Length: 535
Image (cartoon, rainbow, N blue to C red; front, side, top):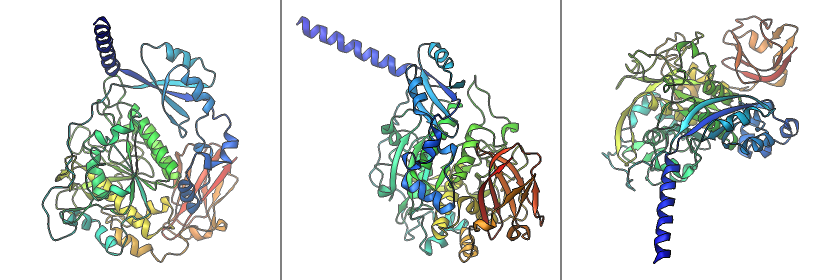
């Protein structure tokens, strides 16, 4: 009897302790590192940290592995792990995130390490509860004789149905979906069962939670992936999908930008082609500096990483935000990224008018934003399996991302940066962009027709730019083309120079610091990309 009573006491104590541990708030810090240690050897063996699919994607686009691709130095990670729990790591930022409970002693110990150059508190974490939702195995909703159901008019706005009719549904393309969770995506019969390649949680490293939490992600995912005859068709029903959770449900903190960075790097490593971002940040919780208009210059953590993702050969599509008409009516981070396709929302049943809620541009440094537009009012699948209406730029982004997947299947030799340019050029107001819809409503079928027979999608090595003194010399192929644009990216992936030479054969570099640059020269017909040292 005494032993049984003692066992009950021990059980009760363990349950109380478990509740206390779950309720405990963990402070989260990002630790920035001095270097990457054994970087040279790692560059020679990219197959160690990049999948075969990721390397193939880069080979197709002529993108070489560089210092940004090298993982964070393992020895540094192990040293930090002796003091605090390592939650994530970013090779693009050369940083790790740690979780700390019970005071700042661990932080002070980490600061003493000779390879640490900075440490920043970015958020807290308190355990999240799974969603209280029970999934129906079958999708419910109004059924029609049209296989597209209530999706046809939405997909016809950007002429995606015509690409489907040609047989291009995104087959062979992988889309990484970053969101707040994908509740019941693993049990709903949405037609995507065999096309989810992975599901990971970068907020708390509990992958089992990815499909048991969040109500937003399942809706954005369904806009691309659904294939339910007579009810709903997604924009890219033939694509493969990686479901990546990056949004913390209990607050708005800088940490979420780092969760997204971890996910973007993971998407790169597994060979994803497109990243959909139906997320955006401006107002943060008390205690953290919120985003200002002046910050919309592609310099935020998330925007920098989004631009780096494009230099790795991926296309990043991001919702513009739903602040239109409010005190904050501007786009949000990371849609201000230089090479991020920022998607505005069209008003309901309109093919040319901006939805009132859709956020506006331009970026802080005067670039056209948003970039393109798609319907913001759609029918999609919620976490209970019902086909229902939803509105927001969160849904215009996956329509654009899915259209790009279909277009890329149709034009497989086009590199990511060129594809972004094609999408912009194939939009309704490319010649006269504004701060409401950017370059306008993309016509994906026209983009296909205009580029399917184009020769020389990637210019030859002989047509690459070169540096002479303080000038970037542009090949004659491009110099004579009035549509030519020159972009230089620094070692961190940040856009350092953007110029339209307009017939000139050279661009001045005298304002740039010395160093290595990725040089991209693009016209309507050709594109060239190479790395140069400006010394």
